[in-house]
Amino acid sequence: MADKKDKNTKRQIQEDNLDEALDDSFPASDPPAQGGITGDRGPPKKPEKAPKT
Image (cartoon, rainbow, N blue to C red; front, side):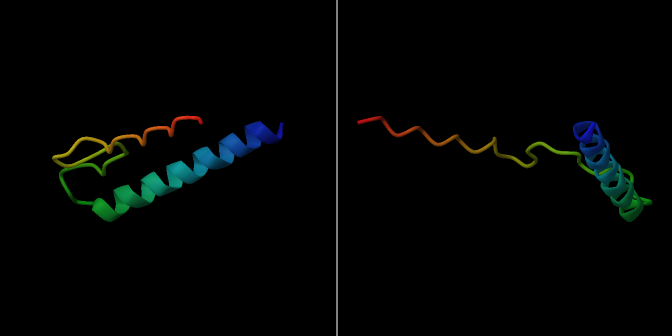
């Protein structure tokens, strides 16, 4: 049952953060970004794994 409570707690924190971001952006015409890469560049490349010796 602890896992379900942890998920609910994390979800509530996310909801609270979203509510705060929406309140801070009012009365802007664009909603706040919810994630992902923004800008004119793609995501950074993942580091290559070192070969095993």
